[in-house]
Image (cartoon, rainbow, N blue to C red):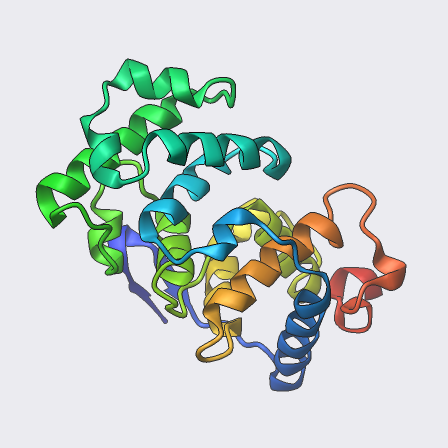
Length: 228
């Protein structure tokens, strides 16, 4: 059985063993409590600042984003300020992060937020997804990190962690719908913020694309890929 969700995303039933689910949740949150990164966008719940960080982090390493995040917000401290800036000015402020469609998209989101929502970022999934430049991951990140909702996310790091621990074989790109469902089903109720931040950090620091630290990984015992 399946049903269609927003923008045609397909959902299929996925079975996650209860014991494994609980172990994963507990171990991940415990690891994050001790080892999670201290990042500037984690010191705020301002939806605008969360949005800026998420757009900046697309295809860009964290250490390059941090100084530009501070600089950008110093120049455009509010979504209204960003909407009033010229596209070229925003692009120059963005440099040298690269992938230069992003500053234009971010400014367009700011303009739409001012025009449609009075200068606020909407909290509903459907409204976020209706905005040009906001996809499923960014919508989930804003809902989770700005509004403390139990919303799923699936970036490259999260996809890698969930695929290795719960599936272990096949092409993760072809299993994206299944991984989205896993991401949603695994969130402990009321802990979406910490859980999603932990997933991203775990993929960036432990379950890395190259040379993952499997021997000291707290998921080693329950990891499908490690045991296969």
